[in-house]
Image 1 (cartoon, one colour):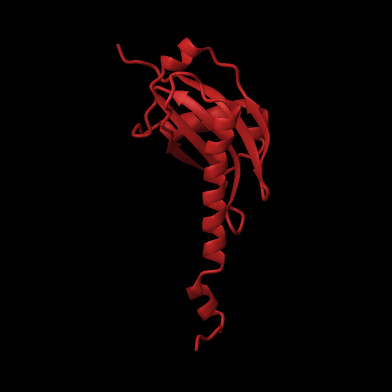
Image 2 (image 1 turned 60 degrees about the vertical axis):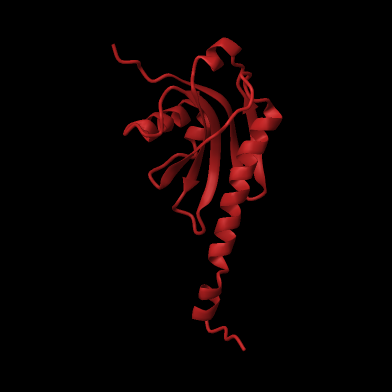
Length: 146
């Protein structure tokens, strides 16, 4: 009998231009947490903005691997369950999934969750800044090098 996808939302937050806001840690019992093998950070990216903006994120423990063709649909469903995350979802929002390696059998603490999603936000924000101010973009705009 095939296993049905099971997921537990551990943490969610919103993102602004300053970083994370409105963090929420969900209470999860250790046996439920340890029964699921995979931990992901999932971030919602608004591609309708220029530059793209990371608008929300969550940490989720699941038995639903990212290799599954329905993985992102399942993660999207998780975003739609939480009202503040659902409010930022629309057709120009895509999801970015990153596996997370946890060193403990215990659920991540709020500080650890903030670190994981904060690092993803920082990396995304930095890549957007670099793409806006790349040298090729400056040269195309008439800036000459000596």
